[in-house]
Image 1 (cartoon, one colour):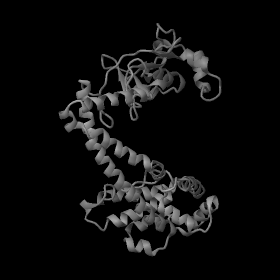
Image 2 (cartoon, one colour):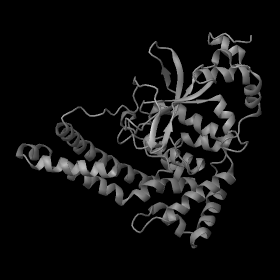
Image 3 (cartoon, one colour):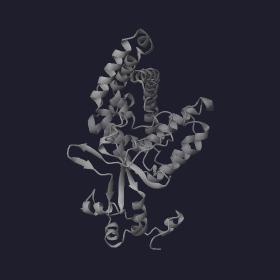
Image 4 (cartoon, one colour):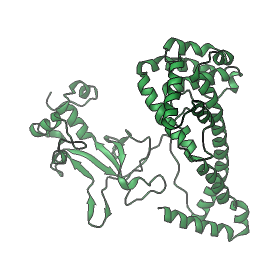
Length: 390
């Protein structure tokens, strides 16, 4: 795939330079994209570590480092933003967001465990310590250096200082801090709030740089895509991510390599054949018993001689598709999409008609499980699907 893409880009560049009009219109696109990409590559390790923290403009719910540190970042950011006119605030920190922020600061108490907080934050700090020269996160470097120690000892000392000195593990204190001005937060001398205030400077700089590069890539990318469409002489595959869309496909197996052929259906018979009692082939005992004792009845596919479990289709699947309904030509639900085959992992970049497949669970298997394994009679009745045994 990489080889094909590089070869096509070389042909595209040659096509652009072959005509003065094309050169004037598209000439700078490839170079501008590469310049922007080079800038992102230069700091990608640091940006990966920063991604463990909530971004400016979010409410802190996307943090993977520490919910307490996340709440501190939210509180400091909220105090900064509330001093501005509401329409000038960052998205996620406007007056309309206060209720949801307050609710998250309250409900986080249900899952708060200080030992877990320390472990996850230590993991984050180790990654920050290991960043290449020139990519360090200044706020974290200063906080670790202030302990007078190095390595894991510095991390342990910083964690002790943060969690011994902070009051943000107390729900009432945390929620009440949402009503404080920025100066009042600073006056608390809470080490978690102080670290958050310092970190926000780094996060804001990172976000500004990211937005600038995204803007440059949008401009250059539009010219590049226009050139590519003209070069190919055909419409390009649309980017439909994050939109509602309706696609069509057929049920079809595939041949990934010589001597290997995957049929489009798997069956309940195959589930039992694969069952070893160990993950990932550990079937629940109730399912095994039902498969051995219950008649397949209306769920039997005569051509397969068993209850169909999963089937392959030529749909293009990507992140966010899981759970999408699969319907037949009559608009009847026949399954739910939930995964892609191994060979479809590159389909976000180039869809392969012969290899890319979506894996779907067959509705007949879902109904068989509901009826014979779970005894979900009421659900079947609510769905308008009468149980074969009730």
